[in-house]
Amino acid sequence: MDLQQAVKLRLLKLCKERNITINKLSTLSGITQSTVNGLINGTSQNPKLLTIVRLCYGLDMPLKDFFDDEVFIDIDDE
Image (cartoon, rainbow, N blue to C red; front, side, top):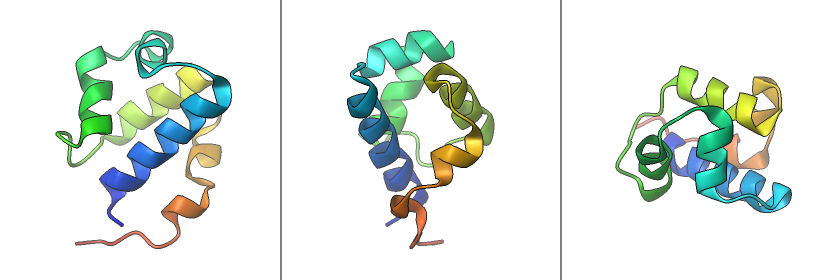
């Protein structure tokens, strides 16, 4: 699995756990809807760390907790 796919799966999982939509996550994070959609639909192939930091802020979670998930264990670096 590549990083983009892992980030997508993690965001979808967190939204489901918190019972929020991707649109709500966008609002909470102060990130444009198109940016979040790009992460989810795959048009953004290389998510910036600052974007993930802002998403974590919107999710009210530390960055380390975002990456503390089994989905990031076997990331393909190609």
